[in-house]
Image (cartoon, rainbow over all chains, first blue to last red):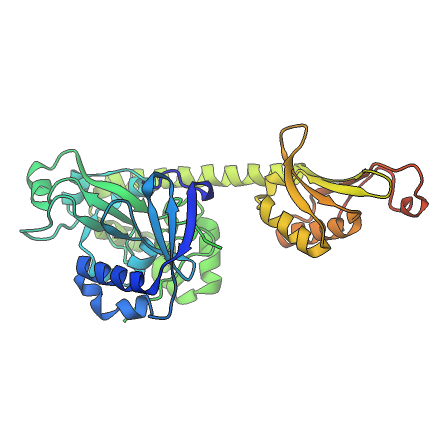
Length: 181
Length: 203
């Protein structure tokens, strides 16, 4: 999604009204229930969320100049900066060491990388198709990418072939390096 | 409750991912100076001899062969990255900035600055800075060679020159040539001191 993304793709910037801010926060908590305890710490009541509308109907939400989450359609997707602050709240999968290189250059994640010895998938029933997942790497603490499941985790285990996770946002991609002044 | 993540100042990633960016050498130096504790956790084992290496292999699950290949690829990437950086630096050093004063009507003149695009400077922002610094109009325009240049209205050659020197010094590019060109007007003796074609490198 952010393979190419520069300042020129930004169409407009606007401040989010506080009532809207409340609904946004509620929505975020609804999507990731574990965020509930920390949401006021992450986005204090007094902070100002800014909405940045971009090319391709991508909307970024920033707090204090840092992109916290974004949405393309209805779903809110956390940015890695937010994930690193509180990693426990999101569905997570882990890939093996051999895959890191490819993930960091923006590849979709293939099933074998999710099922090998160094990788981790959640036990059954796992996650549904189209879930937004955070991608961790073997022996690493911080997450390295955010993606969307292209088949459910159970299917990944049984089929074990082809694309498993669609890449949305990874470390060192243009969104990661994007700054608002 | 919240974590405050640490990011590498060189490659901007969390330090544990530095090895995949190809800038590992500089990242390591930075981390050792800035956060010795983290450095110890991440790299201390690696620097030791065979013991540590075999330990690392046991840790990783992808097998000796693939690990070796990965290592090799990473080294290659690193070499590539280094070469590229070298080239870029070379390019930066060999390019030059031209500051030019042009005469307009009668007593008026304007200053054009070109050759800045190599240095990753935000032209629009710099133009804004000049505009407020000298209290004049300032804009970014395309010059004859289809390259961007900054045009400042008014006779502010000296100020601009000083500012550019400071800017380059801040970026650690002291040796970049700055050429000052003064297209002289017919009658204006007091600018003669700074006039004429002169090229000099900054101190």
